[in-house]
Amino acid sequence: MNERVYNFSAGPSVLPEEVLVEAAKDMLNYKGSGMSVMEMSHRSKVFDSIIKEAESLFKELMDIPDNYKVLFLQGGASTQFSMVPLNLFNNTKTADYVETGSWASKAIKEAKRYGAVNVLASSKDKTYSYIPKLDPSTFTKDADYFHITVNNTIYGTRFAPESIPDTGNVPLVGDMSSNILSEVYDIKKFGLVYAGAQKNMGPSGLTTVIIRDDLIGNEMDITPTMLNYKIHADADSLYNTPPCYAIYICMLIFKWLKEKGGVAAMEKINKEKAALLYDYLDESNLFKATVAAEDRSLMNVPFVTGNDDLDAAFVKEATEKGFVNLKGHRSVGGMRASIYNAMPFEGVEKLVKLMKDFEVKNK
Ligand SMILES: *Cc1c(COP(=O)(O)O)cnc(C)c1O
Image (tube, rainbow, N blue to C red; front, side, top):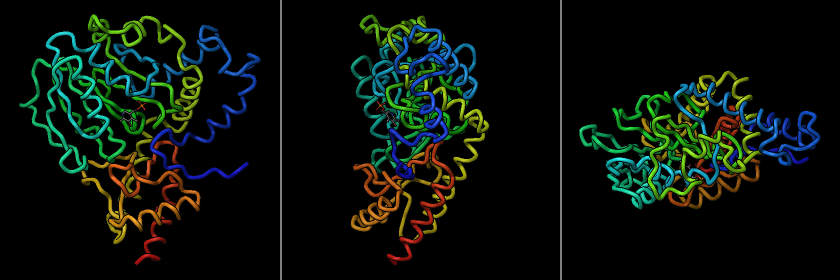
């Protein structure tokens, strides 16, 4: 078998090695069922215990109160860009959005199909390299909801847990695709949180939605059945065939997270990993972070040398040495290291060492 690389991909991204080994072990015969999880009915007893365990571990890890439902859906986070307005535009058909990147822009574009969207603030003027300051007096008092992208995967910014806006009675909706389970957020501040699994949670094909009970069942008349939260909530995410194998892998990852001490323990390691990288970027004479210090993501760290040829040379050398997927998103350029939960501390340590050596050679 080839050696595994340090994979800094933004998504789909690195998964815990222990989980992959366990899944491989159970590939042909899952717990005496005589078949793979991929081959079993989603209505079987065996699968029922997998999805129930996934749900209960997820609730425990994120400290989700009883008046919220967890849904396991498909269609990626991108489908939530439509599903949120279709289900939540039920009164004034107005929503506030903060434009902090291209995922936020895509969410705004979809919501505009169904109602009035106020873009309260934007950081587009500086390539989304900061989180705009919000003035609560500008919030729409009777909006049906308020939407933020909690972590901006492409640009490397985030709303930290302490800077989640207080939207009062207006339900706050958060896209947490790239930082769910990375640090402790108080779910009670949100009416709805959604996340595609393939960044920090598991394989692609699964989207989790955490939704407060009172936001279920007031969908617009035009809402397609498959985009109706109530349909999925009433059927415990088994209205139709769910992404069974992705749910199974997530269940294993939730178990792994719990064994590691849960989200608070992950947060501590993630902060150490991020600090290691940002501290070096702040002192380096070659590499620079692109994001305002107070808004930096713990998960996605973009950086540049300011010279396209040097950037390309660094990415090439890193790839040859087994540090892969470091090329930045085309809209930012340079490099981006995604250092999700499954990236070990040692991977970041070795990356920083590689950067230091590169800096010495390219003085
Ligand atoms: C990746 C990403 C998306 C899109 O996810 P898909 O599952 O590919 O639809 C949306 N929002 C954020 C913040 C992302 O990182």
